[in-house]
Image (cartoon, rainbow, N blue to C red):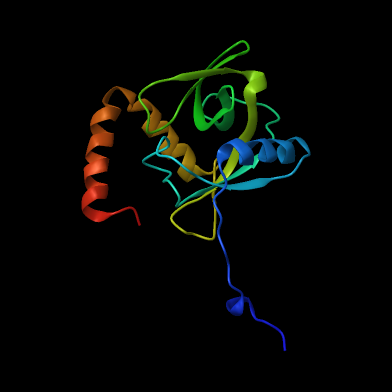
Length: 162
């Protein structure tokens, strides 16, 4: 008797980023694509903690607006958007953050090519119209972002994240 896909029990296990991210970097360097469940709130309101996933590839080139996996301090990794490139120096900011972080080009290990959001089975491409429009609007709202994020946090408390 064979088991059907619905009979198989799926177990999830969370692995600390200090162990997981170096393995992901190794896989990216070997030319693999990696799908990573997102943790943290720094990319709100578009991406949510423990809900969404990013499809990462090793970047061939980078540009302002790209969401990248970068090491911003020894063993401290973030998936944030590039907001400035000045030679070898990269400035990053999470969509849900007000402060910037910096790294060098050599500290960028992955590029987010797609995101699976809200439990969907079809990803949103970072080169697609939806992501580009969102990115264009949200990055230009930086001066008033703190107020929009405050309103969003209230919305989440009332209605939840689903």
